[in-house]
Amino acid sequence: MVWKRKGGGFTFTEPKTKQSRRSIPISNSVINALKIHRRKQLEEKLKLGAAYGKLDLVFASEVGTPIQPKNLLDRHFRPLLTKAELPILRLYDLRHTTATLLLSAGENPKVVSERLGHASIVLTLDTYSHVLPTMQESATNKLEKMMSGT
Image (tube, rainbow, N blue to C red; front, side):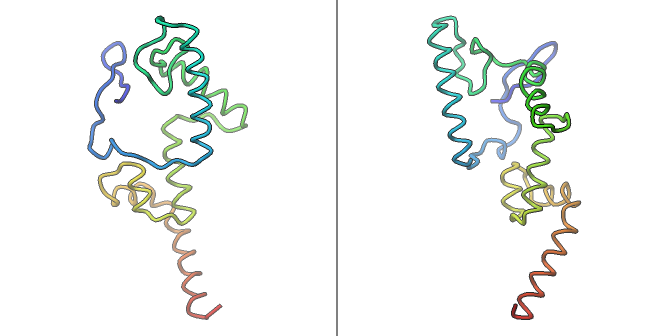
């Protein structure tokens, strides 16, 4: 489900494409953080009993209801950015940053494209073409090492 703006409020909708519904491997540190988060969430649910929301959301308000986007930004996301001494950015910028970092680190563009849910690798390569010049230099250096036997 996707939490989207509709009229004067928000509603849950189905993802817009088949590629949007996918599994993405996550690291052990993320799994551990999610387990801790879930334990805290279950404690809140026990305290509130029937008053806790029934949607079983991974990320919910203190009463188990969907988090309003403005509250998510103001109460959670921006304070984390400030604490980490990072510039204020949009949540969506994290997606772009992740793709840029993966491509810059030499990850296969097809893998990055699949993680992003792009219908085509062409979209990924067109969107993140600014990363490609440094990848060209890296490819040149790798080829030189292979050809020279070093």
